[in-house]
Image 1: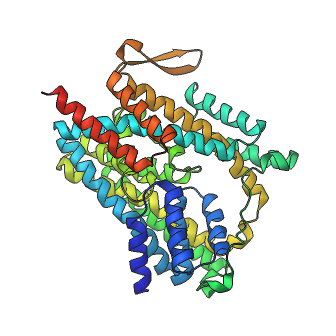
Image 2: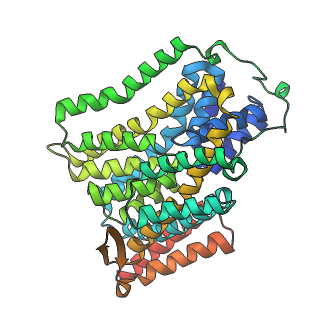
Image 3: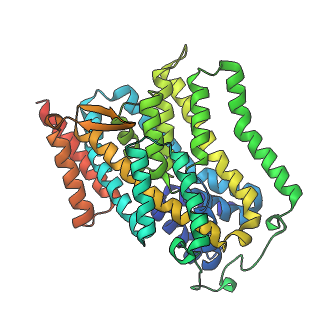
Length: 444
């Protein structure tokens, strides 16, 4: 257990680069170096986590920890995976809220915004390359983009519709809708790993254990929300954030970029927790710190409470909201793993679920494209008006308000990512430095 704790600390501190980079780090440490788990069981666990809402890398760490050391091991692995990012983003949120007027801090985030825009475009291309394998998937992606960008259809409805289309499409043309297929690992023998084919008593599914797990984790998830509702009332910013991010935790299929479109538009247009460009600032924090990308919701929660602190200090209000939002975002992840883990063998080769996931991932391409365009409009233009007619609601930028400096930094970031093949972290750091230099020069 002592070795496991230090290993999960190491994994958490190295978990940069989004889910692909984080999964690669875990594969290198757990499969190749430590030989704790075989290639096949690692991929089986990954298949299951990809079917779940929430950050698949954090859930994969929780699953392996649970497999090795039961519930305590899962808790240690999951918490240590999230903790470095939580501390980093909390510190950056305090810096952002309290010292943003400083030229260096302002320049830092000025350079990050257009660079993050290029990263989001890269995500559209990567997800699209994985999901859009035939005409049906392109149609689903186009439909999700039109529904969200032009008609403001709620993200959960888009995900639910895509899942239904995938399930029905599998009955009609299974070869068309089964794009994301279950993986099989044949690169390592189970005998070479510490776990091998060992199935502990805690991995055996029973009704009693399932009911007990569900009751405990649902109580941990919802009792704080209910307590806040009773104590503070429905208009409290804490109650609104707890309810909203509990909903977001259930619909985060397709990765963090997908749900960010939902979170960004709701946080800006409905609740007023953020200004339009600030979501990119938060995403820049999450991109350059360890931990799941979805940890950006902590920044949203912090800023919402900081701006509506009630009778307490704004920084204390923001910190409490950070803890609350992190709680309702990640407690469900433990529920999915501890409740569903024992059933993984029956789920991992389920082709209907894989077809539903294929359709959801195709829809996510359209959702993330919507996110990229929405970010671009609010990052590169200082004036945006809403065009509303015939049920449409489309943000239209005023072309004369384009920010040429931000556009140039965004173009430079795109060149670094797509032409020079620079990594995400170096690109973001270089663009942040350019932003600082630009702001300092403007103040001379």
